[in-house]
Length: 145
Length: 145
DNA sequence: TATTGTTATACTCTATAACTATA
DNA sequence: TATAGTTATAGAGTATAACAATA
Image (cartoon, rainbow over all chains, first blue to last red; front, side, top):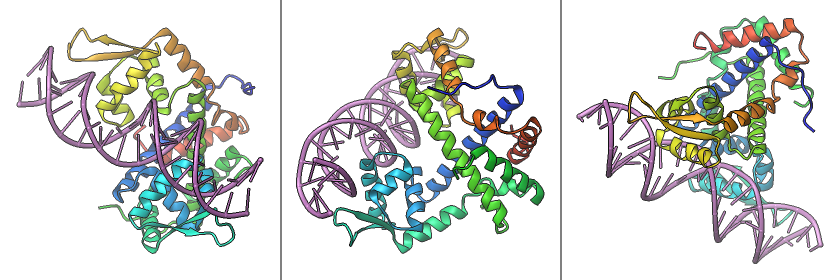
């Protein structure tokens, strides 16, 4: 069953609305930044993941919360552009490890640098305010961080 | 040119990371809530818009920030399910107004009620904290609200 | 038998360009 | 001629089901 919630007061609805705006703004900027590198959002997310560590295809699907069959195509397209490569896993010959190439890592870094969202607006807040914001967001998100 | 930003400090990066988590969480819940009503995310967003007011196709595209040609298909599918209907605009015969049906409005209400995100976690904050969060988010988002 | 990655299929969303009917 | 909505098309993401190789 869906948990029952008390009727939301005006203040809560206002905060929910602000969060929805943040979400919309964040997504626009992410897609725009990806587009500047001729990447789709999904490709950019996978590349950002692989820039940290090589991962089995299955693990990528878990991170993106989509079916493993979809990852095949996304990695195919990244591989065709030389940003990612597939390597065998020495421990399990069923597994393929997707890994970012040097060029892929460079692209990931430039992508992250072009993602100004939240960084630019946060510059308008004092350190004390940013700390408050951090603590409130942490409590909102709960223990599972 | 992309505006130059000072190198981000640890605190700022942490807040950016928390916001990214909020964004991811919000999207998961939105898609899940839409799915429970057999709607895609795009269909749910359009339905939510039309539940407030009838809109010309063009205006829907502006709100969703996509090409007008895409709206045709989305409204087609909502119309096929009886959630939305197309009406002529008496003032301009080129324009078609998309409007939610009674059933569409009911679905929109249930959709919004099943969107617990941000409402549930916010319940853990005091009114004073929610006010602080609201003010900080407002300042982050700037004047263009 | 179970698991990993892939293929095949179908649907939706997306942008682009061409078309129609109005203005 | 300009605009609103549509159609046609192609590419990408998504889920489902079936498959080969490996465990």
